[in-house]
Image (cartoon, rainbow, N blue to C red; front, side, top):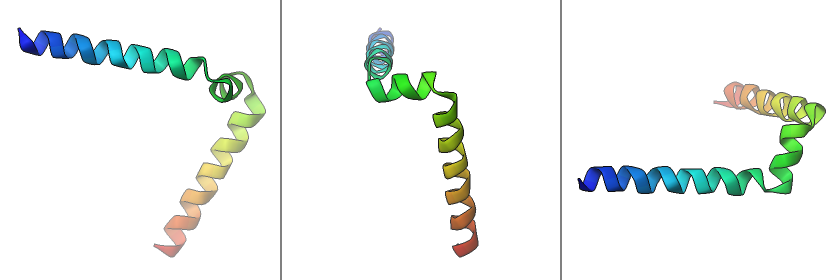
Length: 55
């Protein structure tokens, strides 16, 4: 029974975190702005490739 309560508590915490993230203006802009997402994706890929070169 304790496992069910713990799972329910974890699920509620995840739901609250998701709701809080969705209400964040930075996250909202990231969701709505295609160019911003594309630029972020390119920056992440470039940094990953740079790390691979030095590692």
